[in-house]
Structure formats: C-alpha cells, structure tokens
Amino acid sequence: MRAVATRVTRASVSVEGTEVGSIAEPGLLVLLGVTHSDGSGEAVAMARKLHELRVLRDEESCATTGAPLLVVSQFTLYGSTKRGRRPSWTEAARPEQAEPLVDAVVAELRRRGAEVATGVFGAMMSIESVNDGPFTLLVEV
Image (cartoon, rainbow, N blue to C red; front, side, top):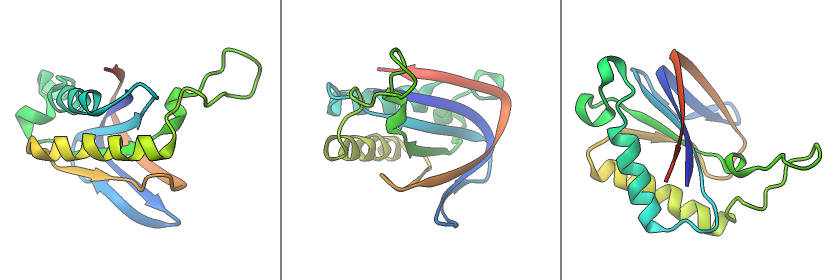
C-alpha cells in the first residue's frame, strides 16, 4: 500500500462540481493507492502510520492534535513509467480489491478517533488544496 501525504491548511475534493469531502483546518491530504499483495494488515498499518505520522507543525501528528485527514483513492500511485511513454497500471489492484481496502484504511482511522473526509472511489475527482510548507511524503507499508 502506498500513500502520498501532504500537509495542508485546507483541502477539498469534488465530483462533477459538487464537493464530496473537505477539511477546513490544518491536516493531511492523503492520496492512497493499493497493489495486488495488499490486505487488511496493510490497511491497519497504513492507517496507524498516517494517524501517527509526526509531520504537522512542531512535529505533531493527527493523533496528537486531532487534525483531520482527507483520504482520496489514487490507483495511479502504482503506475509505472519504466518503459515507453504510456504508464502501465498492472501493479495497481483491481477496483474490487482496492475499494474495500481503501474503505478499511478510512474505517481504521475513524476507529482510532480521527476526523476523516473522503473522495468517491473510482470517480473523476477534482482536488483543491493549500499546501502547508510545502511538505509531502511518500508513505509505504
């Protein structure tokens, strides 16, 4: 499982011009990708890592500050550009495997007490964010 976590002051995601998820205060925008070998263990580990990641101001985490997270599924994180000019998506999990695991990460974050907003799995989404720093990390489990 792979995520791109960006520290933001605010962020939102829209589908067809309608906002479906947002955070209006400092927190993390998380683009989340799933590969074939991922399972429930990776979902729990990713949620823990994202929640406890000490990348907010003063080396705080969402767990210690209560900062919100906006989680958006992003199969393109497993795109490969090693050969040619057209990305290959063979390392990305199929939707029927990926969607429950993205949902599991969100559920685990919420179980841990995190405030979580989301996009819509499989939809064409528009994301707006105001980066804080900028500060962006690749997170893998």
